[in-house]
Image (cartoon, rainbow, N blue to C red; front, top):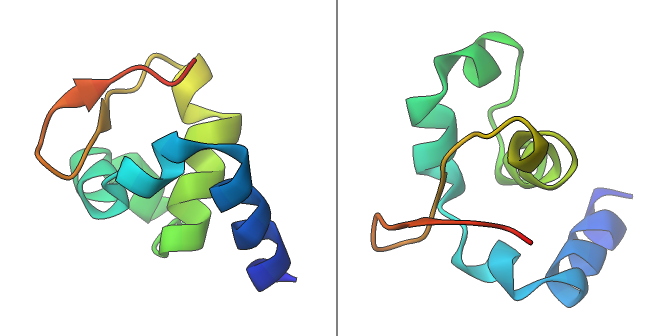
Amino acid sequence: MEKIVKDIFEVKSSYVKKFDWKRYIEYYTDLRDCGILSEFDAIYHMIYHGRFNNRNLYDMNGNTFIYN
């Protein structure tokens, strides 16, 4: 199931490919406290929650970006 959803993420958006999920969960410690520790969980959170909650999204170069 996780692989299928991850494949959908990758097809759905080029943002997922540049998203620095490790920095995201490092910066937002509340995510780690809630058990978001994997790439899959971080991407899922970013797409379905984080971008609507005005959380900063980072690319692999440390730049912030907006997921439209």
